Length: 104
Image 1 (cartoon, rainbow, N blue to C red):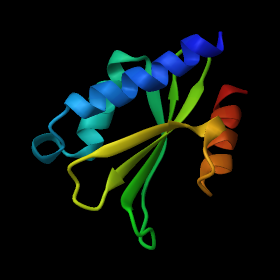
Image 2 (cartoon, one colour):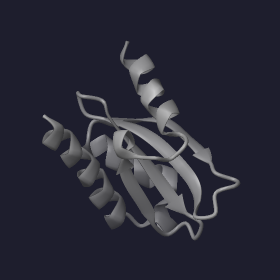
Image 3 (cartoon, rainbow, N blue to C red):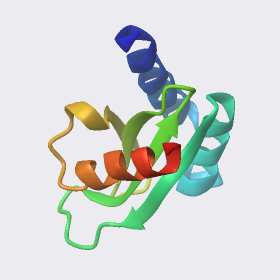
């Protein structure tokens, strides 16, 4: 089952890599990709003090509520996606808690 969940995170990353972030904007590109993957946004916020990224979105994917973190770089032209459970990013616990709260 873990492979299936990891696959959803990889699929999200690929869909975002193919998106035109400049034309669509981060939120629209993210929502379009999530629509294809039966996903939803848990939160989407600015990162004012992060040296590498300007935004972070936490998302839940599919029936197993796989949680991913999606980062938008400062240029606004590329994203990075990672499995929240494997992440060391400070907002990871908040993302996992939001998915658990939503599920219950």
